[in-house]
Length: 435
Image 1: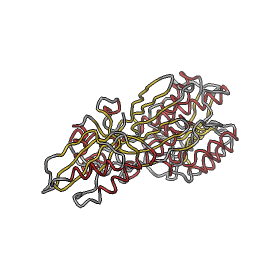
Image 2: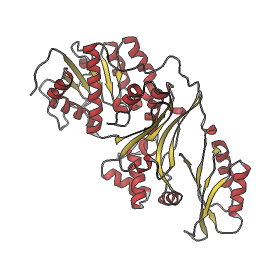
Image 3: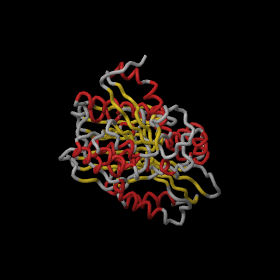
Image 4: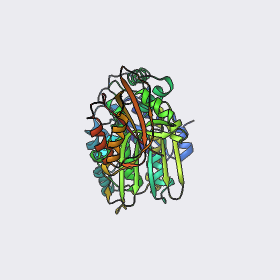
């Protein structure tokens, strides 16, 4: 049963969509539980949304709901502003103004932080307030707390993983059901895993927003979204998934950040992983992040990366952290942007070195494989294994191969010349490998 406490924290919620309604519902329903576990009374004071007429699955007491964001931000009794409207504008202005008014801010807005985070974090520092954003990456998985707090003494060598449940569901369906990309996408949309316009997910942009945040936390380096190489999954076929399996690999859309001395590479693209790799077994709409650091070694974080309830859990966790900051005057949150990052530059995609899977569709005649191998060799790319499949179309045969490690610049140069060969009849598919 709920009992009042002197340690009362008032919360203003801006945005009552899917996540916002979940946060409102469980803040009120579990107010007593939170008081019992934290000693703090978390009171949802005001809720703002642009459309007051919509039916929602949460009942709000009379007078709690408003269309006026200024009423929430300027209320002197509100301690924490929760921003859940998404996008950059007016979310940025709301967050900046809330910090200026002395409020702590909780947000799940990955695009806002990836693109405008530096200014927002600087404003928080000047205002002596905090911005909490656990829900911005991987939903209910506490990856941000783990990096900032649990592994604060570590030096990170790599952070990579499956950060988009929609793409992972599609690739999983293509692998298990031998579905085409279009069929798997329609299935994901019918089950609510994919939006009506899924382009942000399947083109890799959503993953790049999250990678920018993780790169900042793990390596202390702000990465502009334009500097992250991004490639989506729309060109992956179930044939490529099957051929990859025959080589002992699965295909996942990975967001990858790797440290090389004082250089950082950041990229998002379909990736071949050994079937025995822990990430290969992550199926459906789940997320997983694989971390390698000097003290803890290899760590895997797995769980629901999106959805109303997991994201609600992360937002309320941040609200509790902010409450401890207010009541106790301290918490375990560390400085977000180090004063002097060890990372001095970003490695260009052309300089990335990796192994490759390549799928060429060629006319079935002598000498074609030799010509492909010759062009690869001229660009310093050696073949590890190659299979020429039986014809799938009249006079067209798939040639599938794995290479040894090569530089991206060399691979793209070779690919450009191979695609101009008269014997090549379709766009060649190249997918990078990770160990």
